[in-house]
Length: 89
Image 1 (cartoon, rainbow, N blue to C red):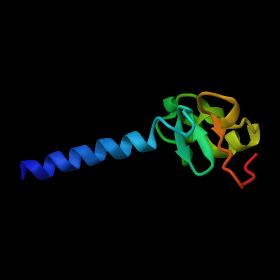
Image 2: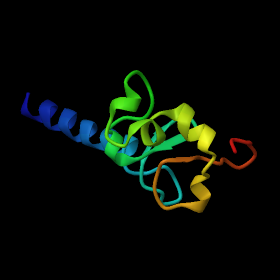
Image 3: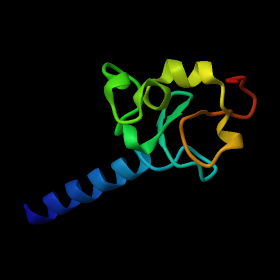
């Protein structure tokens, strides 16, 4: 039972690290689709995003997309992720 709890704790930590802290190419933030929200948001997009720390411009995917700041030009979210071969800008 103890080993199972340790495995669950480790997997939870790993999943949180993947979801938070890296939008690719060393850009700090939280990924949701093609958006990279500021880490201060806690989660990226969804219901209530405008009420999170940073407000809509940092936490709402639609506002981030409209702003058009590409992650290729910054070191931290909020920004729009530009994938090779796709036009997200």
